[in-house]
Length: 100
Image (cartoon, rainbow, N blue to C red; front, top):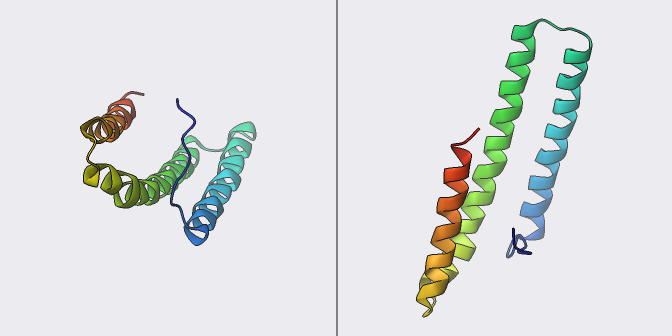
C-alpha cells in the first residue's frame, strides 16, 4: 500500500472519525473480555455485530470524504491516468471487501 494520507480531511471530521475508532476499540476490548469469561455465544455475536456496524459507519464517513475530495479532484483532472488510478483503487477496496 502506498504512503497516501487522509488528504483533505478537515480537523473536525478527523476528530469525529478518531473518536468513533476509539469507541470501537473499547467496545472490542469488551468483546474480548466476554470471550475470555466464556460469555454466552449469542451475546458475543450481538456485540461483534455492533462492532461491525460501527466500523461500517466509519467506512461510510471515509468513503464519503474520499468521493467528495480525492475522486472529485481526479475526475476533474486533465490526466486520464489519475482518473483511472483513483477508480482502480476503489474497485480494489470493494473487491477486497468481498473476501473474508
